[in-house]
Each structure stands twice: as C-alpha cells, then as structure tokens.
Amino acid sequence: MAALSEERIADLVQPYIGTHSTPVGLYTQLSAYLDLLLKWNARTNLTAIREPEEMLRRHFGESLFAGLHLGGILPGGSSLLDFGSGAGFPGLPIQLLRPDFRITLAESQGKKASFLREVVRTLGLATEVWPGRVEAMPQTSGLPRQFDAVTMRAVDNMEAAIPEARRHVAPGGWLVILTTEPEGSSNNIRLPGEGLGWLTLQQKQ
Image (cartoon, rainbow, N blue to C red):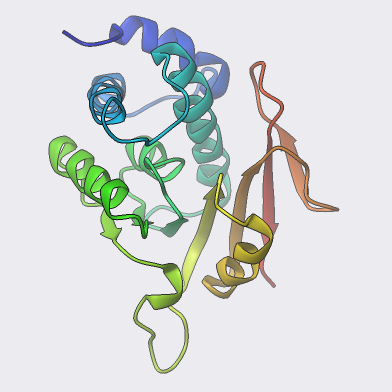
C-alpha cells in the first residue's frame, strides 16, 4: 500500500506548482518514487527527513518549484545536469514534470547511485545516471561536457562545487541552486511553504 494517496500528494505539492498543468500520471509516479525512497531510506541514509509528508514538501515540492521555473526559461528538449543528485533532488522530480528534458543525475556515492538507477528503472525513465564525480565526466575535444542547465541542492562543500558546476553550464545556460541563503545579486526567489530556502538562478554569459 502506498505511503500517501495520490490525492494527498497533490495537496502537498500544490503550493509549489499552483495551477500549472502537469503531465498525466505525475502523482502516480511521485507516489512510486516516494515509496522507493522510504523503503531504501530505512536501510540506507538517503535523507535525514523520515516523515513522508515532510519529504513531499521539502524534497519533492521544492524540486517541482525549480522545475516550473526552468520550464519557463528553457526550451523543450533542453539538457540538464543534476550535480550531486543524492536521492534525486531536484533532478528526478524535474524529469517527471518535464519528460522532454534530457536529464543526467551525477552521484558519486555508490548506494545513492544504485537508488537512482532503481527509480529510473521502476518509473521507466530515460534519465541518465552518472555514477561518479562530475569532474570525471568524459570531455569533448578537451572541454567539459556542458548542459543547458546545472542544478545543485544540498551538495557537500557547496562553495567549492559551484565553480565546477559553472564549467558544465553551456553559454547562455543556467546554474540553478536550491539554497538556504540567497546568492548575491543573482535572481533569487523565495521557496513556497514553511522552509527558509531560496531558488537562485544564474545565467552564464
């Protein structure tokens, strides 16, 4: 039995996606993803949050909020790298919201990468999982592999990771950070809900 009904999931993420239209089957997929997260989290520390409704708000809702904003600035079929994806946030909810995006989840910790592959397999997604450090991704003509957007959330040593993330943003693309503090003079948007987070959008010139 699912941890939460699809109706309850819809209620919990509504503050983050408002009245925007969503793909058919989104809440069914979110439910399956949540159940996998709860199952794996019981034996592998994927997230410190244990309560399903709080997971929906903090992890799923905030990721969907980022996905909506990306959908407004990126064309269909855009590429996205989720840098240090962890349990798949924000990359996997963005993939569910925008199945046309070509998303790569980069996660160097083996157990977390295995979890990501299990979610991708179970949900039948075309999402790529890179089970290693972003710095080790194959280069093209001596240049880092680049994407239309690079997302980051709760990455270890964020200050050191941001310059590496920027190297993988294509010219004109976007660095997207979910953070507890707004980043300088960037485009900072307060996240909905009771959290204290911000969505930061930086365009690469």
